[in-house]
Length: 159
Image 1 (tube, rainbow, N blue to C red):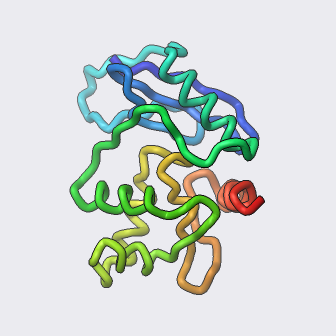
Image 2: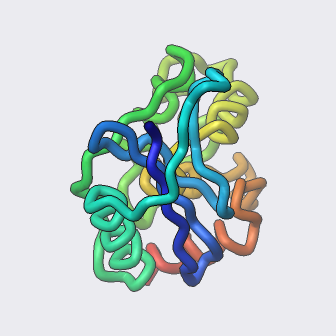
């Protein structure tokens, strides 16, 4: 059973999904996250204590009162995606890296586009900070929540 609950925030609606007391997805909008392709997966709109804790920490982050997250989460994806997502977790609060920087960090210097694709599949928006990845020229490029949201998140971190 996957539990999910949606919240309205300063960056738009966020839906947090939890399975077995572990957060498995945070996404923009009101659709629950699942990395499962089993059509029998059951969803329940239920604000569990784990979902609420994740939301409270995200709300603190959005209000400039938190830099790191303590709630338990996991992500599933390909081996490459997991490598990229773990690399994103290494980008310090308030700093940015280019797609090329991330590709170099994971020792795949020619994988800039693949890094971008992995960013696009990030199941933990905000928490796994793909918003900290920008173009080689310093430009703010695409983001699941939209460019304005990415700019807002970067501004929160620059204060």
